[in-house]
Length: 157
Image 1 (spheres, rainbow, N blue to C red):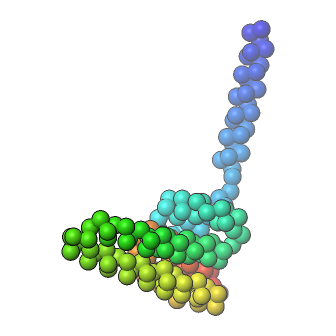
Image 2 (cartoon, rainbow, N blue to C red):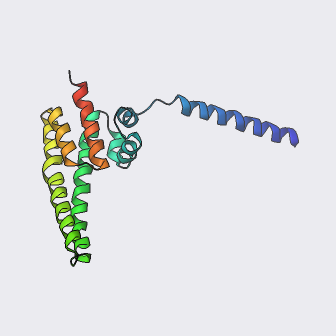
Image 3 (cartoon, rainbow, N blue to C red):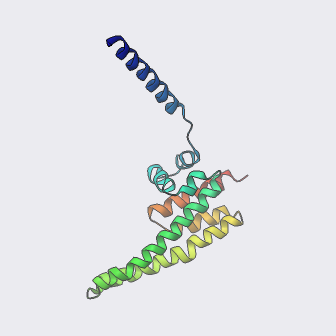
């Protein structure tokens, strides 16, 4: 029995090392390639992989539309949460004022700048789309959107 156990372990070791070599030879996908040349690689990959559409994307422009859609959704969801926080701090004037400003900025980001960036992608105005994404969000998601859109501008001939 000992020789057969040795054989099983040997076969297991060989198959594991072959699997490991295959994983090491794996080429980076579109998300990894795109995120590798912009600031915030880990955040970029995490954010894009959180959306099944991005995993199926075949080009950078699709990724740009997806990340801008995520930005709009994030801004919209944050706007829904602000009134709840305002209710908790309605007696604190400073916090209430900060939350009011926050709501205005998220509204501008979601309803103006990120939507403008989407429209500008459609007209291949990549520099303008990059700028709109940058203005739309100084948060991580906005930075990723700006980076992905900038790839389109850099690749433009």
